[in-house]
Image (cartoon, rainbow, N blue to C red; front, side):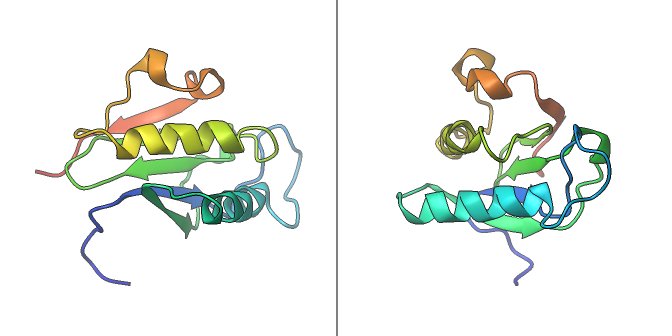
Length: 126
């Protein structure tokens, strides 16, 4: 792993997440299931973003969680991602994010299932 960011946008998926609707940890974790499904789905398509597994985005009350970031782009943390039913929507959001210059996908252009799942928006590095 290098210290420099790739020019491609990145979808970071917390693999230690357990869905917020579940009591107690599961094996495999919901975040791992989400990551595996996104990688499998991404391998079938020409996606314009990287998919990376990360440990703990410290958003446990709103798991499953993901973060979108890219060079010169606003970053976003999303929570309450359903690893069974939001794969296509998450891929659509990450694609739209990757295709922006600044990382801002207008609210109405985001998949409806994800519009209200934003946890944080993080300014780009200068």
